[in-house]
Length: 357
Image (cartoon, one colour):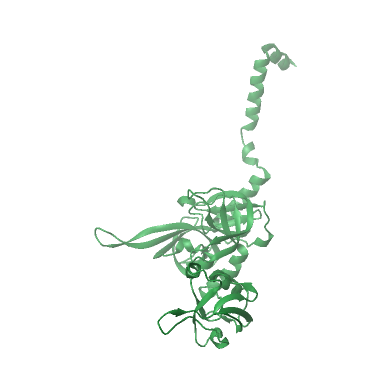
């Protein structure tokens, strides 16, 4: 009671100062170190467990010096990747390693390892590398299921933006089922959109859910300035789980085929053709066996179109991407109905699909 009487005697200002001092004192010490919100604790735990799996990928190219004419090895770009399995396989984006003369992978312990390309899928913007002399303690990421994602769920991105190693950003799933264009102009469908900051250098890094499972591979941003504007994209892990094993085994995606070469989309658009013309039919392959006809030259040297593909298995075809996507829904050995237009005639073919060679 004596202390209370003393504080009252000193006046309300002194009481306020003492109260603030008491609050500040209570906030010091180890309280903050032991305190975390549920969301902070979740983010910290995921980063701690996942970051050892994230690597820094450096792409080096050969350039000729304009003055000495000597060929030099110079950095061409950098990005992110992550350990796929303990044998030293690394998954990253195709555009991160495109055109590389030499690839270097830096692990979290800052050890650098030369890497070789095992498989490439430019149409999915994915690549698999193998690092030389991998250490025994490589950490891999648990794989999630991207079909379980819904808009609003928390996601975390780990990468190396602007060369700043192992950086964490968090956000939510902003949208699902987006489409982006790959480097070979193919459309990648079913892409995840997130507002977790993705900057140059984040490409190829993992997108994780709140359980620390891999749900996507960060691949692109939409930004007029080239920096994160809250619109980032990631290839869903369910696509990654389909593609990566093929890249490891065969070096590429095994795509169903029928044995035709198609006209480019630019040519189709230029001449406003409905459908995609067949430029060439390869002898001995299913399309030739079915009787399909490619373009040919007339008596005066003019190009005469043969079959123009308009439908594959009930899927309308207006571009090369439509054609390949329709075929990718099939398996080698399947027979598909392909509708074409040749002159004024509509023709229907039964064509057996085979595995790409």
